[in-house]
Amino acid sequence: MIRLLNQKLDSYTPRLLELEYPHAGILVPVTDKEGDPHLIFTLRSGNLKTHRGQVAFPGGKKDPEDENLRVTALRETHEEIGLPADHIQIAGQLSQVVSLHGIIVTPFVGLVPHDYPLTANPDEIESIFTVPLQFFIDDRRDRTDRLTFLNTTIHVPSYVWEDYRIWGLSAIVLVDFLNAVYDAGIDITQPPKGK
Image (cartoon, rainbow, N blue to C red; front, side, top):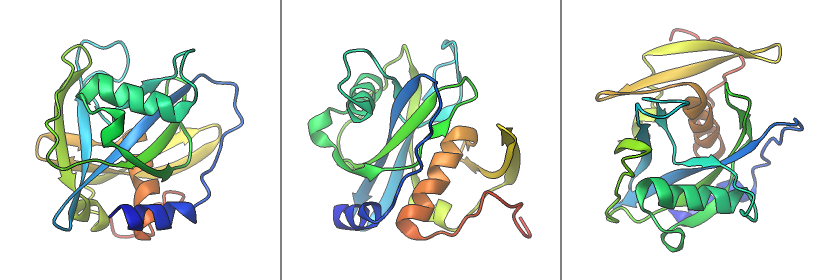
């Protein structure tokens, strides 16, 4: 699995944003048990100031002492779900995106052990769950959200898995991952046909 991730992301050029906004780093954690890859997501606590009760990848804002955004993503992942950096194999970086709160988010893709016991930090995370990658590759969206930022409109899939809705920024990052690694061909610049 790490070979596939490395190969695909080595040939991928992430889009970088030249905006004077604060920065955050997130991890797109991939697990693989016997050829059945899953993505790990979190449900953010309802007590947080921003993005409360939303599905997200682990991560957060860059601290001044963080050497770079990769370090930020690894530190925040450890703080939020208890996964230490030495259990994560970073395969590459995805394109930067801007959150509704004006933060530039830099996603990193990492392979993590499928059997590591993850623990949600109750101050930040309500629950941790995984979704089979095939569910997203099959593009099983239940709706498409039309989002506009800086005079650009995109058409972002929204997915429901069990009791969780994966939408917004998390879905934008997810689509970039699917297109970069699995050649999913999900075009968010146009409304989907027949979806």
